[in-house]
Length: 294
Image 1 (cartoon, rainbow, N blue to C red):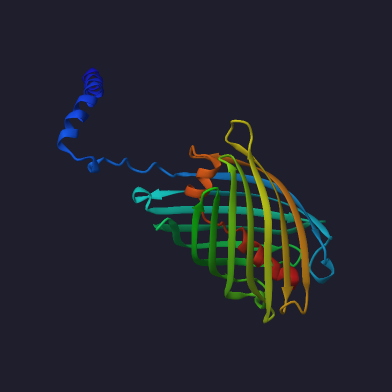
Image 2 (spheres, rainbow, N blue to C red):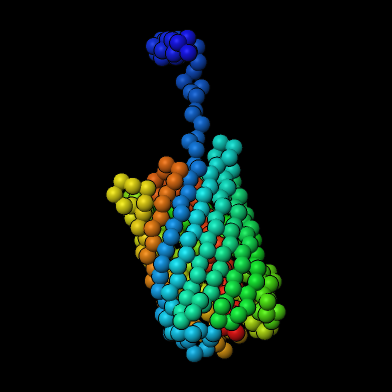
């Protein structure tokens, strides 16, 4: 052990002299580039919210208001010196009005690579979605392509894919129906973030098309010097059957939550490098609403 310490100390003192000697031998263009720092990191978030239903007469609700809560987590990192990236997401959500309304959970795996500054890749996921009021539900899965990139204080992500649901009520099954999402993070600094998102998806209700849209905004701020962050946000949900000619529902959802970050990076680091892609919560609600509108 003493020998190792002595060698390290000797190397440290000898480095300036050695560097001066190398300057005479190696051209300046041969400067050694340090490997990229690890991008591993992620977050766990717990949240609670309340919803107001504007058009509850059309659909399978017990009450025009309901509460919901959930937990979600994402983690990711880099491979091959940062050229390849991976991300894993999981979430669980329960909605309740006069009784339990719905429950949904799922997970998604992402893989991407760097293409001229863009993170470009593919994803696949699966979950289970159940409507307690409609007393039906079943497993679902989704897959597609996606991309993300940072532009200064803004980080943008988008995905396109196809989703399927195998409901207990066969007339609510849908296979490889299109969905798409976009999301933008704006960083006021490394530890304060505003997020906006927009998503659209299609389903089937008794051979009729269903349209589902979700949009929202969220604020996230670090709590002191801790690894915990406070979240507050709004989500709007809109769903209709048969291109808006039949059942239509609108909901407003407000929520608060707390996130814990891990991996050592800032809020900006985590959301632009470790976990830049969109999670699967949209697909869970899309499957639930085939039963809600039925």
